Amino acid sequence: MPATHLPSAAGSAKANPTSSSAGSANTSSADLAYLRCRELGMRLSRQRRMVLDLLWSEKAHLSARDIFEKLNTQGRNIGHTSVYQNLEALQSAGVIECLDRASGRLYGYRSDPHSHLTCVATGAIQDLDVELPADLIARIEDLTGFTIETYTLHLSGRPRAGC
Ligand SMILES: [Zn+2]
Image 1 (cartoon, helix red, strand yellow):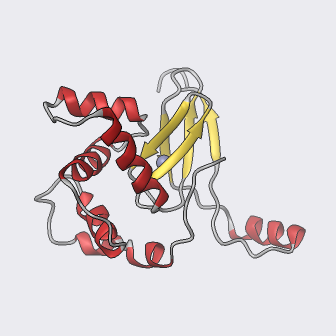
Image 2 (cartoon, protein in one colour):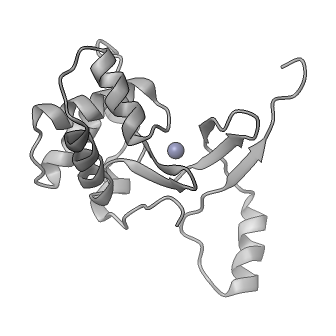
């Protein structure tokens, strides 16, 4: 399955980046994710905050093992099971993203629809915001009879020489 995004009514309407105008004293904006959790009635345990903070500071797509290892390298005391359970709870509530890859699940901080570019040389995945031309979407809608609401593109490639 591709990225699982819940059809969250609250999600897209409230995840408005304009609320971050109060300066950037805090480099990580896990606050937004905290807010989502509170709105959803999820408990924000110390472990859950650790997992969210790490995802927001790394801004990468990480496996449960990566997250466990990074937290423990930072001296955060958290068990593997706790990492795994928090990731599952956060992704099933739509607070974080989850990519199912052949090698296992990867988790990311963004929960809004976005596209991905995978490097075929290293396997690294980066987030991309791709906007398709309106006429292309209109053609797809004509072809399928659907109204397109969101889309996610999966691109792959390798770095060009000299870049
Ligand atoms: Zn992503």
